[in-house]
Length: 77
Ligand SMILES: [Zn+2]
Ligand SMILES: [Zn+2]
Image (cartoon, rainbow, N blue to C red; front, top):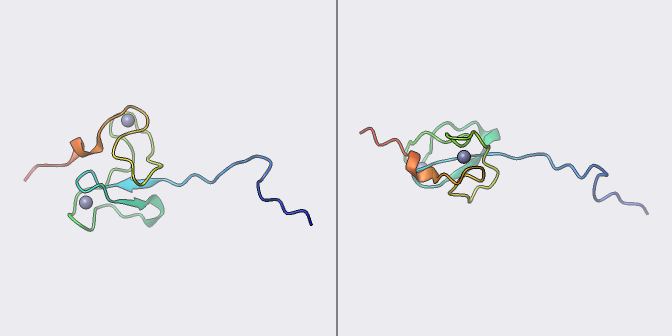
């Protein structure tokens, strides 16, 4: 029995997340949610500074430039 557990390319389909900067809630980008269902804050689709996509739903900081997402909460209220 020859089960190919890993493809020779080792390529993993990338999964991105949209993150709420206010409550740090993350949803898979495939859901196409535009705003957080907890607080209505616009979700970040990528880092506002360096455009790095968000690949970890638990991340609070950009993996590319170290930006803290919480600093991008829209406080125009
Ligand atoms: Zn939220
Ligand atoms: Zn960044």
